Image 1 (cartoon, rainbow, N blue to C red):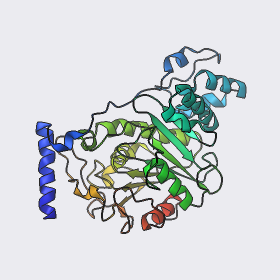
Image 2: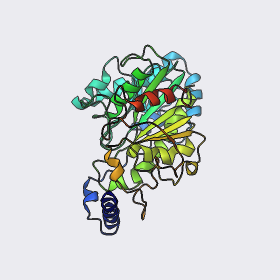
Image 3: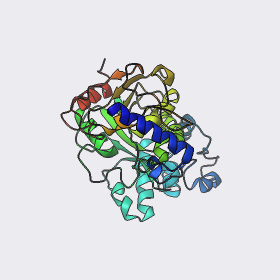
Length: 355
């Protein structure tokens, strides 16, 4: 019966592609937010530093880091005050400056849905109010961490909802907090532990389970942004990261894999990574996969047809990923629940102790 059901789902997926009217296509189509941050035109025109400012569209994170290294504190803070949305999203800029810039940028929106992000104890590494909003938040001391992990979430996440009230250890911020605590860090804050965790909602995620979630358009845009984000971590001297990629986020990670310096890539609750095997990701990272017994993602067909569907099941033996134990995981979002086998395994991977 289960095999018959999966056959029907596969057939429905094909109908979605051909006719565009199947139930799979019921979600709202999203326009991907791409390109340099708001305020870039004013930034490019600014001559106050006595030399051209690095172009957010073309400068590499290493070039950005070198530029800021050549400024004194007063000049750096002038740029933060004048161009908070650019500095706050500029990969390669010093971390404290980005936190300060984003606090200013969040406050300047005047929007209640973002107000909590401006709290003094929040470490907002990126904030873009365009569209549904994008955000990256740091848990732990990223400047001095020996290990760094990045949570890459899937559908229905944005700047306003990434830390919304929901079941504990679910949602990007909840997952990040749970992983940080599992690696010995304090709950929230920047003190304690040697692992920093970033909840990264740096791309436009799909809404619902419509065609956006079934094709790779948003994932391709997200992959380019994720690759640049990890290059920015490298530019400021952070350790090579571990990527924890949930649901549609694993599609983003699959497409970005060859362009990052991640040590490990963990796909959990994955519909596929747009690759037939782990080797086809063309990454030097170790590739891991987890799927709980009650995760509905198992009912999504692992096919790719006319660009729709995300290919092979990362938990299958043929894919070749290392398996993460997940027998006690509940549902699609329970992978970081305290006490689970999966969270214990994730902590070992994050700390470089897993083999």
